[in-house]
Length: 610
Image (cartoon, rainbow, N blue to C red):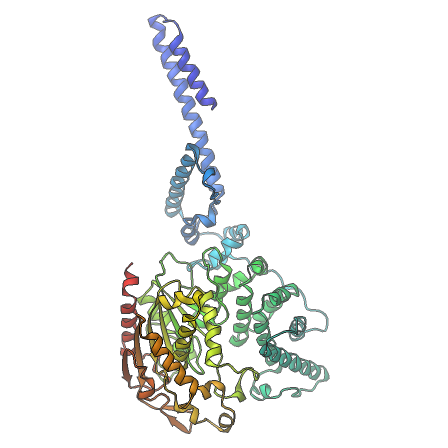
């Protein structure tokens, strides 16, 4: 304003003044021009300098990762009001364009003049990062772990106390009424066994108390570690309830879990259950700041880089639940993203879901076929030679525009070995449970291809039937492009007629009973699905084993015969493998994988082109 007024006054003086002598007019005009242009240059320089300094203040220091993230203004540049009435005017537009230009200049200069950072510079950045930035860095593939401060010191244990006793107190502090039968069972078992363990340790004698079966199945384990596992499994169930997550946090659970995680670095089972609890707690957005302040992000940032697919996937699930800035979906317990596990600029155009079968798992079911070698030795090997999870290693590389999800749920051959004795989960119950979790993860928002093995195929059929009855689930039906069935017993299996030993014969689980040849539930499911699929526009591909499977050391069984694997839709391809290896290709160029890859590409051809 002052600059414009000055210019107007100068112009008026020049226009209204009497003509001076010719000798002085020339120099006076030059002086006026110099004053005018000088003021303009000085004012403009001050404005630009102010804006550059303001922008630099809003940016953090540069590294390869932060430079890439800096282009996403939602992290490093202050956000602008979405109210359009506040965004009008020449000044706003000028500042916007200037910020864009300066950001490009800063990014270019960072590429040219970047040098190695000293440790103290990483610490400065780590101390300056807020919760959102830390989560973004943890989910960036090439981030340096020095960007994360070490977790704060853990509080000392109470005198004459132990982690086992603290864990028991944490579990006992949670509400014990109005709970699911299975949660009550886990909690009662954990509290009973932990009290027996503590009493025995203080008395100097180890004894089996309460339900001795779990101990009888784990003679080789240290009793305290076994009790801790019982408590953690109970906490996993409790952490599925939001109000119980609040109790866990309020009673110091985050610090106690971190202590256990550090104590059991060589025990994947303990660490896996801790990650499950943390991932469940991260579903509650109001707990995010507490989780970050407790130092868990640095632990997760390291875990997600692990070569072990299980460890990396559990950490990726928790970080995705913490990253509400870029991940609108919520990943409940048992739903794991295999790709992409990091933030990516690659647009995701479709989903491929992997559903395992009886006694399967989200990761081990989909490994490469074993060649009589120890799997633990293969983890560190080149993934082009052997992979412990081919959807993550092979499919993600061949189809990077896919989101690949693997689902896990508990199954058992016998009620004798059921993890929860009160649990009687039918295919109908499990399908509704999985459908709810998958919808929360955004399944149905994009085109979908389902890949299933054995009983997992029955779950897929039941899920689609259930989704067709619920208006809020119609997107899953409309976006289903194809289904792959690996040896799915559409008409039942001989497995229910045999047993590995007498305990399976006496107490077959509900899942096994439903797989029997004369199961009414199975026949109804098959008839209903064929009726449902008549007017649907999705493709179907089925594989079936031709070789028998050894169950234990005594029984050789053809689990799913050719006639049972025939859905009555799509192609049915016999493969010379057994039931366990029907979903485990020998190598990347094997027929099983290449035909699967071709089917996925064909089913999603139009969607991947867009």
